Image 1 (cartoon, rainbow, N blue to C red):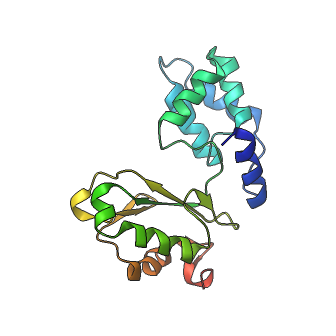
Image 2: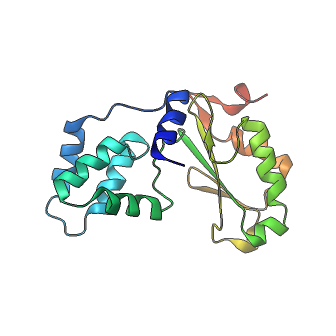
Image 3: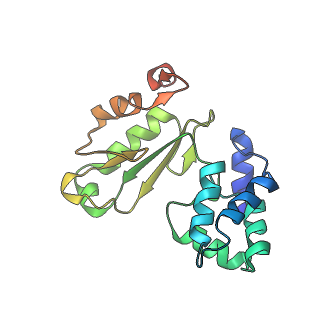
Length: 179
């Protein structure tokens, strides 16, 4: 998938923000004296925008002297970074071997059904991004789902709606959004 495809996807959800050069400059200034600060810079940009906009990455490259290829290499290597806008809430479901044999595929299907999206997508309202990952490091407790850093263990399909309801949606609970 190309970066242009990411942008097209984000335009459909309306979650893309205009990059403010002054904001990026402040982030770069904050880390200017730190050797090897690229990851910290990317973390701050993602905290500000919810993802790593191409325009911001270009600014980082110009200021740090790093090539865009090097910056993309870091941004795509670490799962914590995203090149497309994410929802306000990030849901990660483990699809690793231990979770898979304990029913993760059915749990993943139920999240997709409840949210009305497939893994790797964001809901049209920009509230939820649903992803699958190869391992969350809690194999004995699988299937595992992480919502905004909160781990849910031994997840069954019947537990999916309750998990979704635990994430606030603009002051309400998900039950007002999901049928």
